[in-house]
Amino acid sequence: NIESATADLEALRTVWGTTLAKALPWERLTDVLGSDGVSWQAEKCLELEKEWLCLRLANSAMQGQRTVAERAEKHLKKLAKQFRDNEAQVAALERDLESAQAGAQTSEQDKHSTVASLERVEAENENLERRARELDQQLRHQSDQGQELEVLQQQNKSQAEKLASLEAAKAQLRQKLESLEQECKASEAREKSNNQKLASCNGISQNLAGSLGKLQQEVTDLQAKQRQVKSEAETGLRGIADELPPLSAVVQRIKASHENIYARYRELGEERKRLHNLVLELKGNIRVFVRVRPINEKEKSAEPAGESTVTFAEDVKVSVFEAAQTRRRWFEFDKAFPPKCSQQEVFEEVKPLATSVLDGYNVCIFAYGQTGSGKTFTMSGTADNPGLNVRILKELFREREVRRGDTDIKVALTVTEIYNETIKDLFATKQKKLDVKTNPDGCNTVPGVTELVVESVEDVIRAMEQAQSNRSVMATDMNEESSRSHSIVQVRTTNTCKKQGREYIGKINLVDLAGSENVNKSGVSGQGMREAQNINKSLSALGDVIGSLVAKTPHVPYRNSKLTMMLKDSLGGDSKTLMIVQCSPAQINVTETLSSLNFAARARNVELGKAKRNSKGGE
Picture 1 (cartoon, helix red, strand yellow):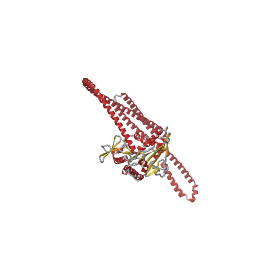
Picture 2: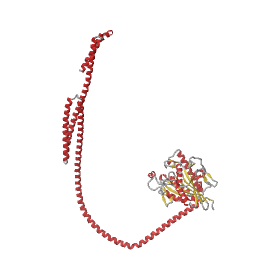
Picture 3: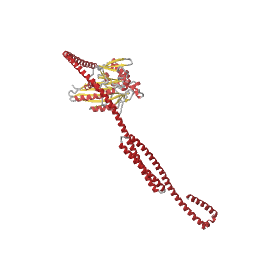
Picture 4: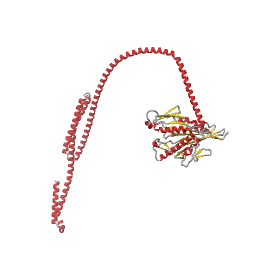
């Protein structure tokens, strides 16, 4: 109706427009518009337009109702499909229930509850089907009413919730049935295992019964043999007891003789050491200790099987096995320290020499060896395990406290390094040019160097940490923290006797030499190469000085290096000098180890003359 009315209206408009165009020229427009026919047609058009608008509104309302009806029909179809799915689920639930009933015969109570639950589910499904049919009828009769559709949607939602609860109940029932089946299977497995254990226990019991009889017979036989052996042992013991007193007396005499011989051996060793030290003191020879550091993991993995590279004998002898030549060379020094020795053991050997500085002697202790051989560890150590520098200074302060009633001791400290043939003051914040000068008395000093007066061990530790932090180091292939300079710690003591007024002035130089370096092994280049060249040059000059002193040549080339100039008082003067040679225990460093030991053997032959005390004033 709406479409036909719209078509009539459009046709009428076309006819009216055509008629109006023919009958109404522009010049007669006013007259025509004022005529009764035109007025009637205008009113008719207005009425038709109103009717057309009403039809459009009615059409819109009908389209909304048609949309609602279509949605309701779709929802009804979906609900019907959901009911069919529920029926299929119910059928599957019935099949599951039947299989559960067959597998759970021992659980009658659970089966009855499951059947009752299933009947309730079927009853609720029938109610839902009946309610769905009623809803279908209501939807057919009331498809044009929107409020009823909303009610139906709410009812459908509640029914869907009921279906979801039924599905949850079904899942719970299925889980319960599965747990019951698992319990049944576990019970059967336990019963089977218990039966097997019972059978095995019966067999073992029978075997044990047979073995028990045999063991009882064996025990009886052993008891008889034990009585026989006991009788024989008692007879033998009585015979031994008769012979024991003469043998015991002989053993006691041998033991006493052995203890006497060992005591005599120790006395002779101490006497030999005392005489040897006396000869060295009279001759003024450079004393030489050798210390071998522990082997590291990298060296251990490369160490060849067979003989050890380094061995020790009699606390004074050390040998080095050269695998390439298949020969072992022995060296004898004043003391040999194996890798397991501690810092304290080394200090105990050095202590008498070091403390003689308080009596007015000049002392020099220097560490020599290849790079990475442990020189800095021996001289400086670590905060937890200090080296000779800190230990000697601590001992000097301890002696000062012991002698405080009779003497007044002052201690001053300077720390310098020789880096690339340049002397640096490790206490100075701003470096200035320093050089070695010879005093009128023939002693060498470094004018302008910072000298700290230390009053306690804490002052010493702070000063040594400051100096060590300013020292030049660099990582190389041979050493992660290789010293690139010669470090010289000089301690000057002034010991004044309160009664006599006599003053003893002593000086001890603690020297940590930079390591001799094979640049092919250390892998240095650039600045590191220049440092290595200067280190090797100064050590070579030290070797030339040692060679001249051994040969007692008229001219000793001290001026070839700043190092030999600073050590002139210790090497050619009237001081007590100790050289600690550090060595590596690894075969890969055997060439450098032999070179260090040969150098130490030559240095041991240097005769400095008897050391003199430096004193003045007093009686």
